Image 1: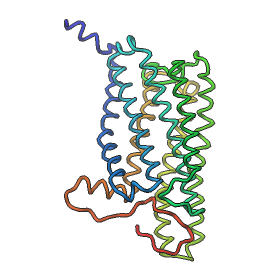
Image 2: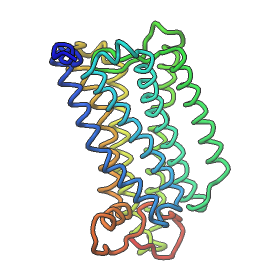
Image 3: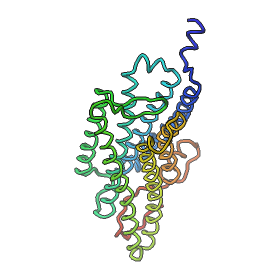
Image 4: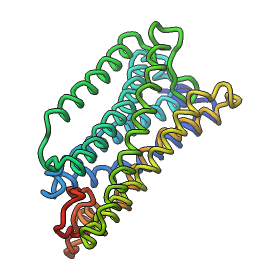
Amino acid sequence: MSSSNTSSLFNTDTELFTIGIVYVVLTVIVFPVYGLLIYALNSESELKENISYKLLNLLNYCDVSQSFCHFLTGIFLIFPIISEKAQFFVRIVGCTANSLWLATFIIMAVLAITRIGVAFFHIKATKWSGWMIVALGIGFTYILVVWMIGCVTQNFELTGPSWSYDMTVEYASLLANLELVLCFPTLALSFFSYILIISSICKKRNIAQSSSSSIFRTEVGILVQATILTAYMAILITLWHNADSWFKMRNFTLASLNCGWILFSHLNLVLLISINKGVRSQILKLLCSKKVPRQTSNLVPVHVSSTAPVES
C-alpha cells in the first residue's frame, strides 16, 4: 500500500481527528477500572447476593457498554472511511449507545423503588420480588423495541463529532419525545426515594440511636450519589435537547455535549467507589496482597424501625 493511500485512511480534518483521539482516550481509561469493579461485585458474596448491588452491577454493564460505543465513535472520527463504507453499522452503534443510555434510567427507577421497599415494606434485600422482575421485563422490552426500531430505520446518525436522531426518519421525533417522558420522571423518582428514606430514618433515630445513626450515614452517602447523578443527567438531557437553540452548533460544542455523555460513566464509577465502603474495601482486597479489614455493604438492608445495630 502506498504512503498516500495510508495517510488517506486518517481524517484530514484536524479538529475531528483530535476529537476522535480524545474520545478514544476518555473511554479506554475506564475499561480496566470497570472490569475490576464488576469482578469485585461478582466475587464478594455479600455484594453479589444483594439485589441492590445486582442492579448496580447491571448499571455498570450498561455503562461500560456505552463506553465501548463511544470508543467506536472515536474510531469512526479518526478513520472516516468506516463511516463512508459501513454507514449501516455506524448507525447501529449510535442507536445501541442511545438504547444503553435509556436502559440506565430503567435500572435507576427499579433500584429506587427497591430501596423504598426494603426501607418501608421490609422486602428482603437478597430476594427478587415479582414486581421487580415485571418492572425490569417491561422496561427492557421497551428498550429492546427502541433499539430494534433504531437498527431497522437507521434513525441515529453521527453528525460531525456528535450523535443525534435523524429527524428525517419516520418515528424519530416520537422516540426523541418519549425519551423525555422516561428520563425526567425517573430522575425525580430516584432522588425523592432517598429523601423519603432519610426523612423516615430521622424520625426513628430516638428509637434506636446507634442503629439509625449508622443507617443514616449510609443513606446520606447514597443520597449524595443519587443527587449528583440526578443533577448531572438532568442538566445533560436539558442541554442535549436544547442545544440547537441555545448554542452555536460548532464541532467544539457538539464534542462537548458528547463528552458530557461519555463522562457520565466516569462519574458513576467514581461515585460508586468513593462513597461506598463495601465496594471500595473489596477492590482494595483485589489490588493488595495484604488483607484489608472487611467493611459491610453501603447498601445494607434498611429497616428503619429495626433496633439491631448495623455495622458501617
